[in-house]
Image (cartoon, rainbow, N blue to C red; front, side, top):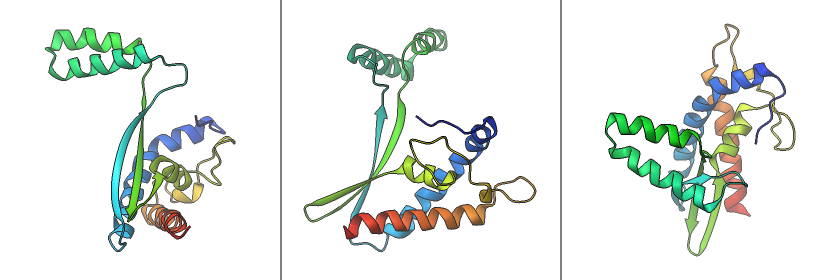
Amino acid sequence: MLTFATPRDRDQAAQLMQPCLIRVIDNIRKHTENLDWRSDYVEQLMWSADTTEAQRQQVKALAAQLETAEPDAAIAIRQQLDQLPTPAPAYELRLSRDDRTVTLDIWELCFQVCFYAYSLDQPVTVDESLWDKTGDIDWLVLDEKAQEIVVSAINRLIES
């Protein structure tokens, strides 16, 4: 679980995470196009440690019902879901070649792009270089940082 150094870091991260994800995914695509490795994306749900199996099954069943529910029933289902633990999506890139498979956590890459000197065990601070002088996202800097982190992470994995 991320801990933010300041409320401002939390607000800036909320603005940056989707652009970071977009740039990370695009740079993964660019870099893996030229590799002789098969790449697959895997989405998983991450549950908090205190979530029971019964709660997980209940959430899955309610989510399935919600997909085809009438509007009135959907409201009741959402109210039930609001009372249950909510899983967080986790995305992995799996690279495979021959009998070898390596995995990258895409959110971890996004965190490395978004935060200055990212470390899971320290409060995070948004990398101020990702903002231009007007307070908007500096897309060029964001793309360059994402490219550097993605290329380095993939190369480190496949060369080890």
